Image (cartoon, rainbow, N blue to C red):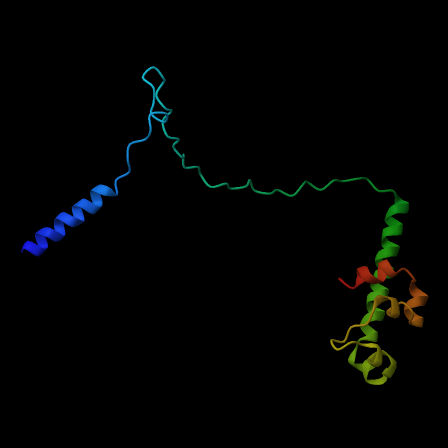
Length: 137
């Protein structure tokens, strides 16, 4: 048991020597100085939840008869372009149209620019923007 007592004394001596020495006089607080501010507390905040997004109300602008007629013409043209493009990529046409099959990439796509050069589509419109828009219809 002398060994365990000696071991305990050595452990206590090592712990006592590892305690930090008191700070130097320059660091100590002076008697007349105000006390240090209290440590800052971190306040828990509620998580940020963005307000719900509400789509803006649709705006209504009265349209003239000419504007309505133009919109109907554009919609009719879009329907004709869609029908023609659907025909180009139909099974019936692709079985016979070697040129179109050779122009396709590995996934079966061709460029809108090339599509716009086809005679029947070109007779409907040369507007690449319109042809690109009907792709989504």
